[in-house]
Image (tube, rainbow, N blue to C red):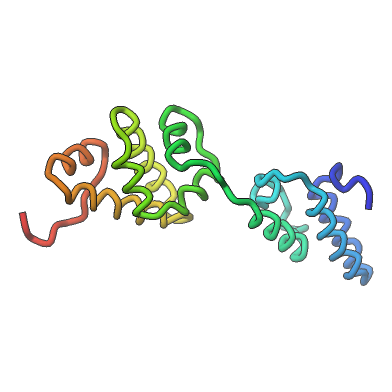
Length: 178
């Protein structure tokens, strides 16, 4: 199979559908796997939300599985702190940034925040809270991990709690103790 890198996903999906229509499922499956294997290593390419399959020609299940398998091979090696700082300084955030932040644990958020000083500290906290609020539905782990980390930090001293509140952190209701 030649030139698979020059064919777009809509056309390959149509070709796969055509093969299936005429009972050539094995060839369709082979084409789906060969197409994804031939594509360069760009994680965004394998994110189906960047492709425009129509409702009357949905993505073939085998092609979809091949896309998802290739996408799962990619490990995002970027530093979450650097990503938060870049966004805080005005870079737009992308889906892959949100996925990366969704994998950050409360312990990692806490270490990141406690290991940062000055203007960068404010940027990390405010940017993290903003992203967590905007992605509560699709990446609830960001909100829960970040808020757990911030609660731990705020619990260390009233001064820390006050500074975090000034940057937008809303502590959970207390248990009645003041």
